[in-house]
Length: 341
Image (spheres, one colour):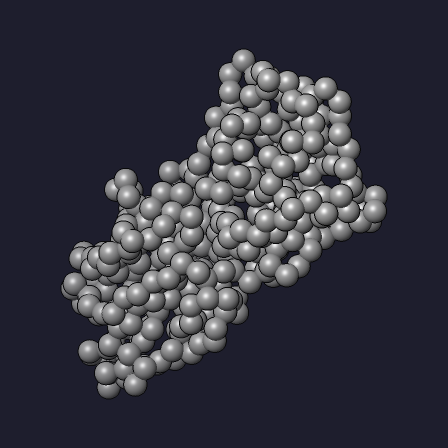
């Protein structure tokens, strides 16, 4: 019997039961139990004498068209991202559509001010992009709609010496970036995620492919162009959050010997290719590797792993990812399940 509780959620078929009722924006460890565990329970769980299966075998597949539901993306920009990024949108005072303006200034011949109506009348782009934290496991893949930053800059006469751009929110927050980086990456000034317009507190966000979320300024009101003696560096994920991997399945049922269990999750390394996803049923003593070298770097790897149970007992499936440059997930993800005769 195959156990795969699932619905179609913006892409691949969902397997087992899904954390947070959708594609989770949380990270490794979020799906290792059906409920939140306190530290003592975690120690007890880790102390269980799990049945070990060397060189676990199963059926593996992956796709890259799965998207995080819009509500989860908004949660990422609100609660999960509060400590890692710019101020969340809900923390800003609401501003009506008609009263929201963006200034393009700095080293330009004349400051250009435009309202949301004018921005939304410009040629729109809809793209799939990731939002990934540099300092936590948080990650989402979204469809975003907005205008190219380069199209907005074409509205002003930019000093030819300009090499730096900073997107600032209503309170002046923003991280400087190389102008060439932003234009080459075809950054968007986004006003819609999925089918939802941004809140009255933020209205506009910057999204940049293959870039960590701390550069995704929210509630953008100023685009400042400047000349820097040293062009600012764009930093990627911290080392401990490279090659992110997550199991989205939480297992609440007890399975029988011979049942097929479908596990599901994602792997991503913010612009570096994921070349393999690996599984272990013996506490990491052996790993079975499944090739994903055909994956592109623009989208996350959304994987499924089918395992047929062979004996009764308690089991813990560990999952990790391997990036193209050899980096292995510093933080593996796990799921626990039980099998009876």
